[in-house]
Length: 216
Image 1 (cartoon, rainbow, N blue to C red):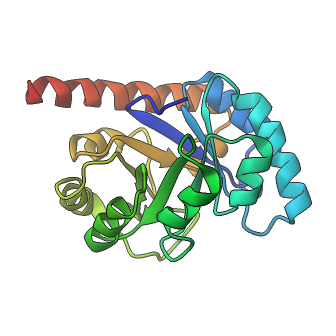
Image 2 (cartoon, rainbow, N blue to C red):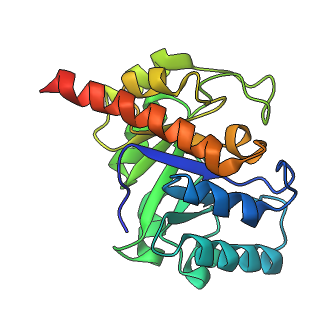
């Protein structure tokens, strides 16, 4: 599967779900229009991580992309659609030699310089942050929408904003050039992840359509 834009991505955090069940949260989110699920459980042992990845593969199969954070081995073993690399992690060119030509490679970036470097090394898309204040990373430096504009002006691959994204600010993110949004709290801590995803997705799609019309 290739990403369909605008793209709403759910980043997992099994310690931050209203239901207490990360897989069930992902299931509701996908039903609500999430087009990508990123498995990001940095403290999870490899065996447990692989089990979670396989469960999420069953949830997303044919409906949404599954991306595994950093762990190329887990991504390959579970049949994921791609891998998300940290800015200081394995470079995209090296990852490509491991995963082949079909798997997507994303890179987390925090600056224009990092974005340009990631694109030149072969990343398919970027996850850019931190955009706004976020409950999952309190006190983190934020770049705001100006960072989104600066990065999207310099690269030609899709840029997905992350950090404090919600229904109330996702339109501004897209209007600033982002091809999508990655969320944690706005969906995982919602009482109804499906409904929360639907609202964010529709707001994002409307903004994306308006931007496309202005470019015609």
